[in-house]
Amino acid sequence: MNVGDTLPPLEIAVTRTLIVAGAIASRDYQDVHHDTALAREKGSPDIFMNILTTNGLVGRYITDRLGSRAVLRKVAIRLGAPNYPGDTMTLTGTVTAVLGNTVEIRVVGTNGIGHHVSGTVTAEVAR
Amino acid sequence: MTADATGTAEEAARFHALLAAFEGQPAATAGRGKDAVNEPMIRHWCEAMGDTNPAYSGPDAIAPPTMLQAWTMGGLSGHSDRSSAYDELLALLDGAGFTSVVATDCEQEYLRPLRPGDTITFDAVIESVSPRKTTKLGTGHFVTTRMDVRAGGQPAGTHRFRILKYAPAARPAQEPGPRPKTAARRPRPVVNRDNQGFWDGVRDHRLLIQRCTSCATLRFPWLPGCNACASPDWDTVEASGAGTVFSYVVLHHPPFPAFDPPYAVALVELAEGVRMISSITGVPYDKVRIGLPVQLEFLRVDDDLELPVFRGSEG
Image (cartoon, chains in turn brown, red):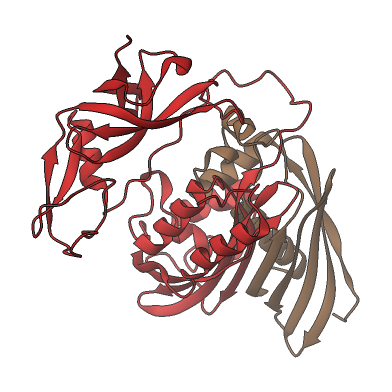
C-alpha cells in the first residue's frame, strides 16, 4: 500500500431505516434522528443521520477495504452536508501516509448535496 | 443581557466571555457506561451499519472501535453523570436563543480493543467554546469536549466531540410534506439547584419568595445569596398572590412560536414588595396600565408546564 493509492468506493443507501437504526444502535434518541415533524420544527427539512452512525460507516468502510485483520487506531471526522433519507452516500479513500504497518487514509463521503463527511483514519494493517 | 443571534458584535464578545469561563471545567465526572460492553449491542450496531467484519462476532469478539461513544451514551433515561457546569453552559446557550444542537466533529483514538464484559467509565472536560459563528444552519457557538474512556479502569480511548449550539436560520422556503401539526411549545424554564425550590412551589401552586434568615430581606428571583448582607442562608415565604403592575411592555415584534402578538409582559410588584416578570391574563394587552391591581393564578400551558401568571381586574 502506497501513498496516493485509492480504495474502491462504497455506496451507502441512506434510507430512513438506516438513519433510525443507526441512531438507536448508538443510543442516540435526539428527535432530529427519528421524528420528521420535530426535525422540521428545528429548521431541518427531514430527519438526518447522526454522527455516530457516520463514524461507524467510516470505520466499516476502512475495515471492509483493508480486511478484518486491520486495526483501527484513530478516526477523526467532520460533518458537512447532512445525510437525509433517500440520498446515497459514496465513501472514497486515499492513502495519505504509510509508516511501517500504519496507514493514514483520507476519507470523504459525498451525497447528493455535497460532502457529508471528511476525515482521517489511522489503521494498522497486518503483514 | 441580549446575547442572541441578532446582538451586536460587542454584545457577542461579552457573551462569549461568559461562555469561555466554562473552558477547563468538567463536562462529566466519574461517568459510568449504563451497560458493560456486550454482544447484543455490538450485534445491533453491526446490523445497522451493515458491518460483517468477523472480528466483531464469535468467542474472541471485540466491539467495533467506532462504538466508543455509544458505550457512554445516556440513552432515553438521560445523562446522570453530566456535570452541573456542562448543564449550566447549555442552559446559558439555550437562554440566549441557541436552542438547536448538531454534532459537527468527532475525533477518536483507540488504545485497546473493547471486549464483552468490559465495564466503561469516563471523565470529560469542556475544552473550548468558540466565539459566535454564522453557519449555513444558523448562528451559534461550537462547544468542544474531550472524554477519556476507560475499560475495567484502564485507559481504552479518547473521544473529542464538537457540537454547534445554534439559533436555526430561517426555515427552507419550501418544506417537503405538510407542516407539522404539533403547535410550538412555550420555552421551558431553566431549573437548576439555585431555583429548584421556586419551581417545586409552582408545582404545588405556591409562589415562594426567598427570605434571608440573617437580615430578613426578601429576594426575587431566586439567588444563592443575599444582596443586602451576602448571607447564603435563607428560607421562604409564600406570596399572598396580590400585586400591582409596576411596569409593562407590549410585544408586537418579533413573533415567537407559541406566542401570539401583540401581548403585554408586565413587571408585577407583589404585595410583599418584590417584583417579578410575568404575563397578564384577563385584560386585553392595550388595557394593561401601571398600577393595575392583579392577582396570582397558575396557568396550565401544556402537559409539562405550569406557570405563575397574574389576572388583571378591569376598571
